[in-house]
Length: 442
Figure 1 (cartoon, helix red, strand yellow):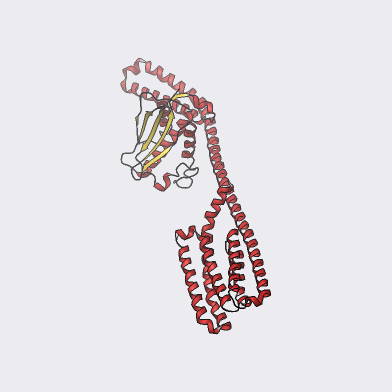
Figure 2 (cartoon, one colour):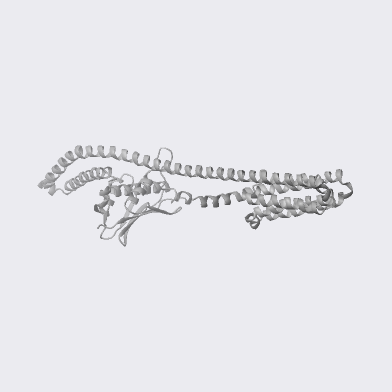
């Protein structure tokens, strides 16, 4: 885990190092060129020679800056930073050698560069140590080749000691700066991880809230439908008995229009009985896993769902293409709820499209041990940017107050509990297709 964090840290630090190194290099060029004023004040007789060297070093540093902007350079940013920092040190060492040796004021430039490397630039510890050692080496060589170096051993020794102290301080700064940057990155990574966990928790809470809202509505609906079933069944049964008696009457049998009216009345009473019964079954859905082991006919579930949404699908042709065997395993009431939601959504979409021949087509086909069910409508379709979000809790394209955006999310969870997946396909302006699988009855 720590190794992965360090690798990610290096990747994230790369762009930061590129930006910092580029800024430092441009600053270095400005300082090198401004040194022309120092040359003019101290060594006017060597000004042209020194100016030519300064311009040459500045061009070399600028070339390194251009290399940093390439992918190759970004992968080697620390080496390139090291290179442009060493160039001014070599220049300064040469100036020390050709001027006053150990007592040259240019010695201060070496110290300034070492402090900048440790305090400002995003250098690694080992790079800073090597840079400090090279700086001291350059100074020693510059003084060794100067004719007056033998008579200035005291100043030379003091300067070398001060350079060593500057290199040590720079290395310590580099070490703690690097640790500080890594700790800051680790804290940011931990914070991002906590935010992701919090978002996931909020998402789960939102889904739980949606399920609880739906369950509360279903519980209220179940109580209402149970009362309706008790209150409505008795008068419906009385009516059915009265119609049966009337249909047996010879006068009714001899009067065709009257007998036809009695048949219609009987069918109407039976439909009322079925609707109330379906409503109770739908409302008493449960999340108990034992209900998933029950077997039922999908065809029967479709019948129930079609009856429950009859008022919404009025005027819409609902066709079916089912196999002879539709015996599946699962929670029948929950699947009825899924079909009700899909049919209701299809009806709303079709009416919004104002189709001349509105239709919904239900198909089912066995694929191995799964029955693949498809509900397709000829509505306006779903926009590509919304297709991937239709199963998100509280996502809806309806007007405010026309829907909570929970239906498809709950339907997705129901199918998932049955070991399948609810998917959506659509062609904008033509059709929408909802597909899910149900396991074959054991």
